[in-house]
Length: 134
Ligand SMILES: *[C@@H]1O[C@H](CO)[C@@H](O)[C@H](O)[C@H]1NC(C)=O
Ligand SMILES: *[C@@H]1O[C@H](CO)[C@@H](O)[C@H](O)[C@H]1NC(C)=O
Image 1: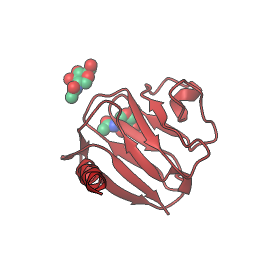
Image 2: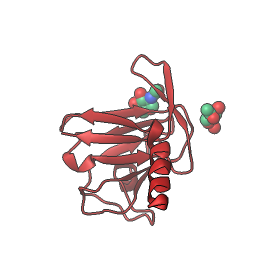
Image 3: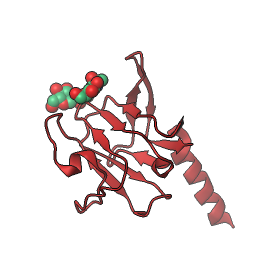
Image 4: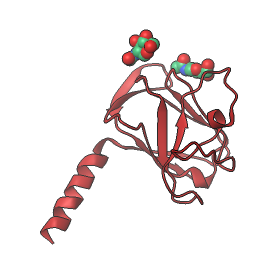
């Protein structure tokens, strides 16, 4: 019992800075961070590929399938997931989100990063977000 309580409080500490973001299905989702990073990761329980999915940072001119799709960590591309893009400047875009994009998103290896709001101003520090598509 004691260890369960400890586990719960650890989890809630870890989730303290995770934003919960909601978006309507069919809209484009954008998320902007100031941190340089090469990859986003996500876990999306409503999808067939339940393991961790990643998308690498690609420049605008790069057109390979892995630049537009989430893939497993071995480089197998999931072409049936929502088209997405992660630019090296920190912009993550998921085009026309579907319910299956609902899940937890984070930057591998970064415990904290700073987001930028629509007005271009830096906002708080975060370590990931929960996306809810409805
Ligand atoms: C991100 O990388 C670019 C190019 O390597 C560098 O000029 C810039 O200072 C870096 N920004 C941060 C926040 O580390
Ligand atoms: C990052 O780059 C992409 C592609 O060039 C662009 O659409 C987006 O607006 C850029 N973001 C910022 C904050 O400059």
